[in-house]
Image (cartoon, rainbow, N blue to C red):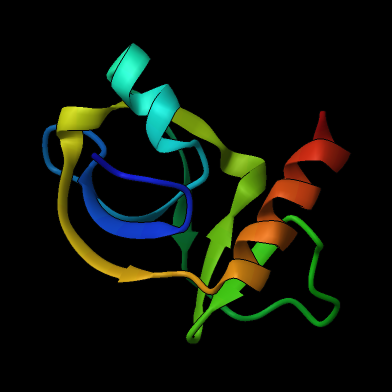
Length: 97
């Protein structure tokens, strides 16, 4: 079961797969069979990075595009975000809500 900080390739719909940063806890996934994810976004980097965009090893994950996803739509795990990146993502989520 996935935990906060895990990075997975995910099936976001019928034809779209994208890497996502898991923000929810393993316990949440076990109880609900869902995960809260921030999808990876592409494009030119912002001149002033927004605090809700989290960089992990050159990839940028958008906390402002947070969504819930069935846990079975997580495909292979491709990495793990450092604890500091997870902390920043949770701070960004708190700031948004």
